Image 1: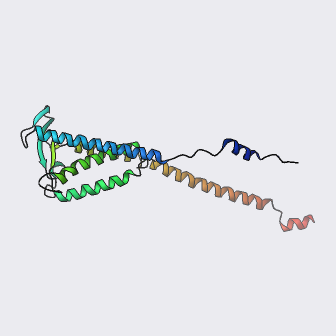
Image 2: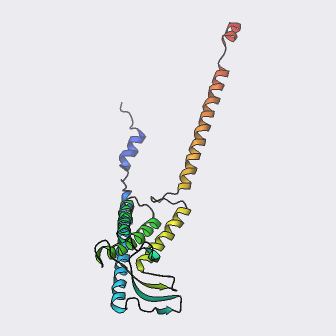
Image 3: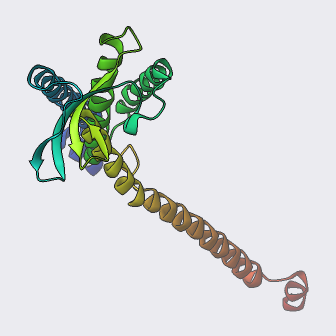
Amino acid sequence: MSTPAEPSAVAGDATGPAPATNPSSGSRALVVWTGALAALVLAVDQLTKWWAESALVPNAPTIPVVGDLLGIRLIYNPGAALSIASGYTWILTIVVTVVVVFIVRAIGRLGSRGWAAALGLLLGGAVGNLVDRLAREPGFARGHVVDFIDYAGFFVGNVADIAVVAAAVLIALLSLRGIGLDGRRHTDERQGGETSDGAGSDGAGSDGTASDAAAGSAPSDGDRGETA
């Protein structure tokens, strides 16, 4: 007489294996999106610098755009923001190059759209000013950055600077919310660890209770002797 097939085997044959998923497809999309945003920032930065050099006279008076709050004035900056470290252009070039390499390496671990936007802006802005330092006068790695956006006379910047500042604000917000580069919240990970530790302690307590109950229910040698 034949035996009936196991229900689990029948169910497995009927449904077939579960389709495989590819968790890295989302990461690849974020990498592509980050690269596209960085390329857009770089293109806008270089085009606006080209326009400023062709339309403005270096070190001329500021042309007002929004009253005294915002204007345009072409200058060549050998240093960092606010003309800091103007005598160490080659050191700034090395620092920015290291930052760019770090950003490129970090992009491969992206799992958050917010971080993708932040790194795209930061990469585009950093490369935009790095191009100036590498390709402009007075020489390789000593080039002066083209600045033309005058902020009420306090300092003069460019589109790359705007992208870097926006990236810094995004990174600060993401860090305050506890969102890591991979998209996971650090607060959730800590809570999950505490929950698992608590569950382990409860399990240990349950095992101890069960052992005590088993020991209490087993008859002692004296009890068996009296019964006999």
